[in-house]
Length: 104
Image (cartoon, rainbow, N blue to C red; front, side, top):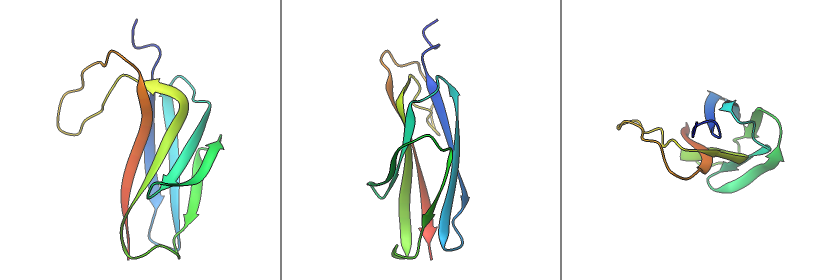
């Protein structure tokens, strides 16, 4: 079928209350080559095979920040909208999950 070439990525902010941001993630489908983690758009780690990371928070300003995890070498055909039904995309798109967290 047309959906046997996709990867779904789930990212969980395990903790953002202390001095570190703890992230963990998993995939379903095609195994990615590696993962890239970005914080507010800047790379934190690239080409890692790990499924967890901790990021120090002490240098971040108070307020909202965004962390993203990209599954390198993988694609998806689903937008995974919060508000609309998913439709199957014709072309593979990058597998990226963004999470917003608050620093107090």
